[in-house]
Length: 165
Image 1 (cartoon, rainbow, N blue to C red):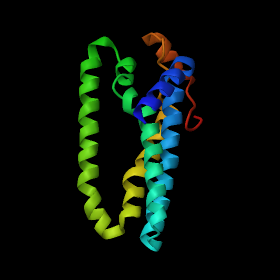
Image 2 (image 1 turned 30 degrees about the vertical axis):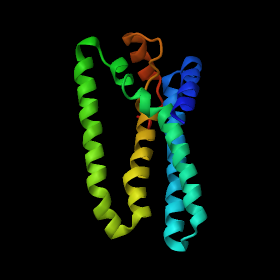
Image 3 (image 1 turned 90 degrees about the horizontal axis):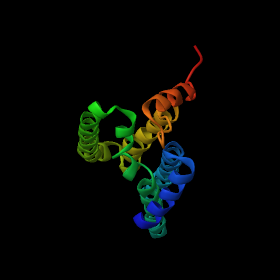
């Protein structure tokens, strides 16, 4: 799955750039997460074993989208957004935030699952952050492919605005 998505990601990045790839991947992840939530909720309610097999398919598709976008791109896109002097700090902070987020998710899931159920915990801990991330990336992530810092600054000025001033 990772191999296929990596090949597809490479062709999308070559043709369209990093921004479209990340927006497509996060949209796919969001849709898969809604499917996973629906299947988890339905399985808890009806206990049909076929739902478990469909859930495995959705998780595989989720993995495909993750490996196509945020999986590989998160390690170098932040380096393209900052100057040479700040790259190591940007990479370090990105790693700290990523690991801290994982810690919070893993720590919060079981107590939330016990209080709200598995499906609703998944919705809160996985779907809401992906939705917020997708919105943030849409309004704040410039295209960085083959661009120097001044061109990236120009791209930032062309991004859609959340609201008109």
